[in-house]
Length: 111
Length: 117
Image 1 (cartoon, rainbow over the protein chains, first blue to last red):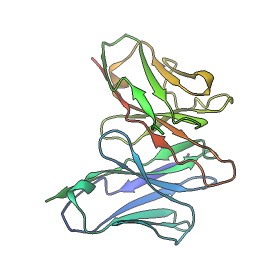
Image 2: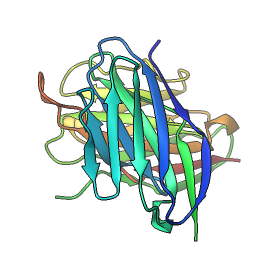
Image 3: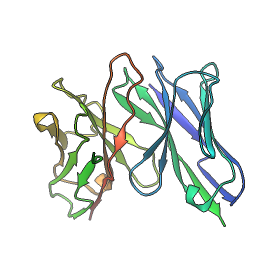
Image 4: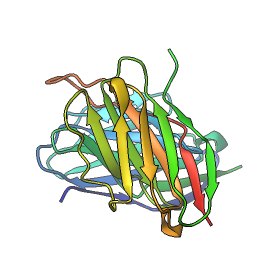
């Protein structure tokens, strides 16, 4: 059964800190790995990763995939209170017909 | 254009009642997904529609749950004889599926928070 595990489940840091969120996966016929940010209800798309070792970057957020070790990390530098959210990692399962999500990491940025 | 919309945004019902949740996907998106998120949990896949193909119902937790998609657009998720454990946020997503390409970026709606008393 396809599985995604995220760690830590919860993280509290001070504004300005750098954080690294982890996602490991087990999936047959890997196609891609996706990161979402969920602040209230609707998860919003951050990154889609398909190739190992190629960093994707958007402002202070960056992510990289390791297909050999089956994990991805999401880095946030110079964190701000607006970064507080649940960060979800997901992989398409069964030929990309549905997403299997991890439990999420609840990130809290204190001023 | 507009994103995925869902209605109602909140629904409170009594145990044993039926509820219907609605999802309007992004225009032109052929794939539509329903997920459930219980308090403090990740998203749990429920059902997937792709074009005119038979839906993938493998995630539906019981036969009290059903969904339909009319005209390849709007979808309704129905929960019959609701139970307290059905309380969750129900999220709908849609995607434009390109076969053989980088696909499956799913755009999520705001969800419906269902509370069963």
